[in-house]
Image 1 (cartoon, rainbow, N blue to C red):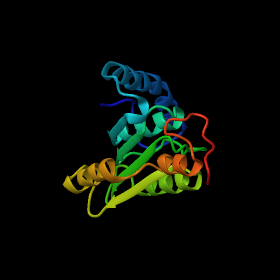
Image 2 (image 1 turned 180 degrees about the vertical axis):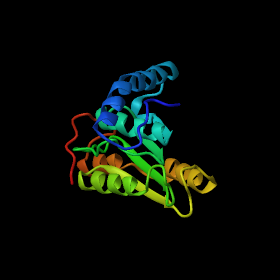
Image 3 (image 1 turned 120 degrees about the horizontal axis):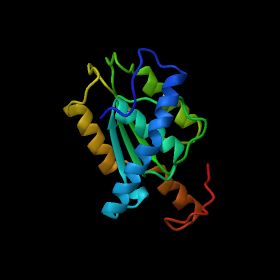
Image 4 (image 1 turned 90 degrees about the vertical axis):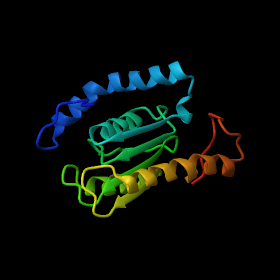
Length: 170
């Protein structure tokens, strides 16, 4: 799905187009969470390319949108200024992606890590702007086996899972 019109260069107007599409995206996610009875923290949003960018921008703007995000070859339109451990973000990017260069994923992972976020980054060797069996396996393994940082934070704080007023320890 195309959420916003693309331009040849990533400029400020791209952020405006993403911001214009974001309410519809968030409403769609919330609608399907309600329809299926799945809480936000139990939701995994998965996106490729522009869809991945919408997921990243969605969890950046709404920290309570999903518990997990798997991004194949996507990018933040603008890097976040703050991060939350409420969403574990798994970035999976092709090393040879010429549509969205892998440096965007590397910068996102560095930024989120520096801000205290919960992020993983896998760079798939010899992969262009695509999803292949290797990248799909990485995504499935992260969803199955990666323990979100927020669980460790809750355990270290002595709080019970789901406590909203937990003081996070760094």
